[in-house]
Length: 66
Image 1: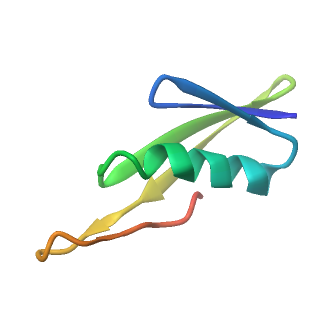
Image 2 (image 1 turned 90 degrees about the horizontal axis):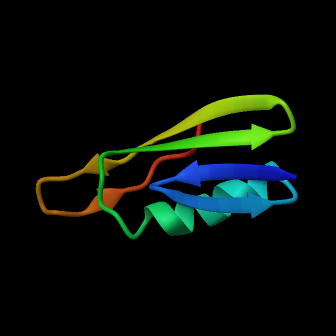
């Protein structure tokens, strides 16, 4: 079981790809150039970042969680 904290919200999922998908749904509501997610699984903690590219014509290209 994976648990993530993102923008003061908690998201849980059984697998890491499912967690990333749910976190993307939360993060897409905000238009930040950088999204940060803290993932906890048991006693282990990891931080994932997603860099979003804002173009001059106000379009956003979403990055991948790394």
